[in-house]
Figure 1: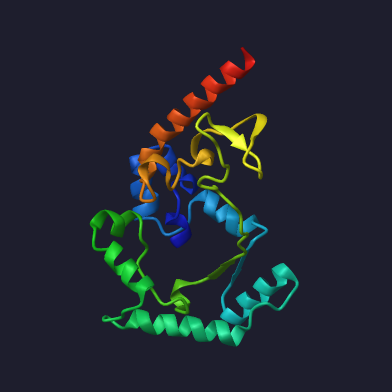
Figure 2: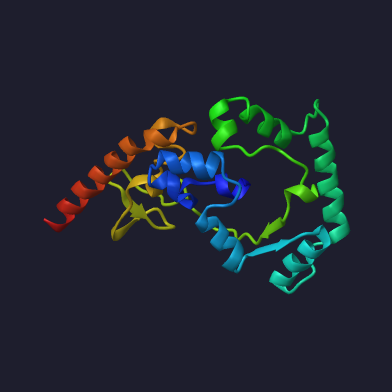
Length: 204
């Protein structure tokens, strides 16, 4: 259920704004949405198993290396499951789940009911191979006031401009380091305007 709740792009009922489907599939349904089920059935990076040892074996099989030790994985999961059984747990992840479920909207449609990972009734176990990637640089290109991209020596690179978040208006810029996602647009427009004007002057 956690996969089914993580991300609206994986839930056609949400992207289609179908309220009946949301009620039927997300709130009352037991199975996963079709895209999530397709990941489980055909995804090259997904493995499922009924026992932890089988799951770890399949996870190691994805890489061709014994990167995971089943006994150590079991030790960590059992420690987590013990925290779940403790109503006064101070574990940050368990607290986060319980706090999120205090709001009825999140409890019904966004945050799955917590359960022991090794609970046989909650299976099957699912493992996913993750790949590290850079989604955004939050200001990875140094620019001048005309939004011209600067080289390693600090001089402008001819004909190359940077505008928007890549020019420093995500996670910083005019709004500082605590900028919210909705505040980036102004900075992006501002840097785009500067880049456009400078490019027009250069080509005039």
